[in-house]
Length: 335
Image 1: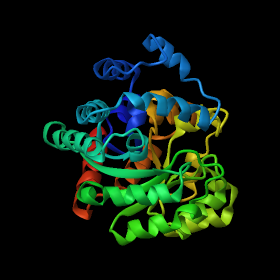
Image 2: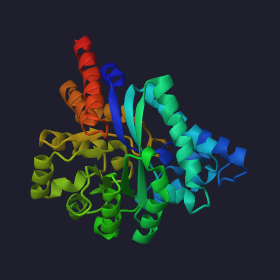
Image 3: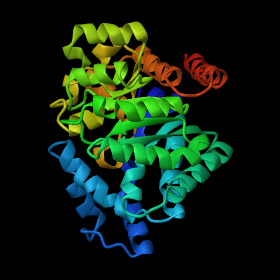
Image 4: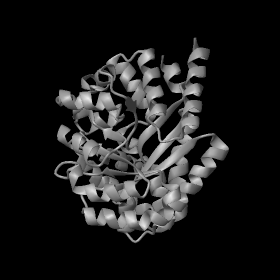
């Protein structure tokens, strides 16, 4: 079963590229750009990755992003993640990035997007991995700042498939960003939003009804509202769930308490993702393996989760069918 999971073709739909920045690369980029870090060794960085809540994680997350200065830095970070995708048989990925984290430091969008697009194009050609970019707004900043960021991104629209909403959820309801998302939809972007992780189920409903999202990122607290679960099932709105992240941030005390498989069996289109893998102790395969070891995930459930990841992706219909067919060939060949 472990080998089956590791080799199974899959997609990742909830990955913050800044959260894939491993300590080794963080130090390398810091040295290259003359950026001092408040750590002297990789071990010190990893020791700091002991979080009590979402905010304590975000504090160090934004600190680590300071080493990202040039287009080459964003290429190197994205390429490192895409190489890990190849090693884990991730054949499609949809990558979140936080422009405000960088533009607020004086880094231009041309460097951020330019580096990621180069890595994306190289990955398709050299690694056989397809990918899309999703630009997220930081909800702890104002809706006005988000609108300004959206405006700045319009010249790069052809490189960005959708927009999202991330960062500190508590106290920052989706409804605050309604006008921003209306503008994004009018510009042709798809929409997603983090909701129902540390925030209440009402935030999920707001994201669906006010922001008109195609997917909910996290969404695990939907189980507290039976009517909301029915809505998500009826509309087949996917949830991009991140099990290791949820446990690390105390959404669940331990993996055996996680509700992901219950949500799957309730008819929800659930997917498995890694969120911020450098910080949360595992990439996509490690999340699948945790479900197998701690929740007794079956082979059939693993296949369904992988199929969901392709069906919930923002690829064209023809490409989506090709991705699902790749999974089906693998399952058939595995016996």
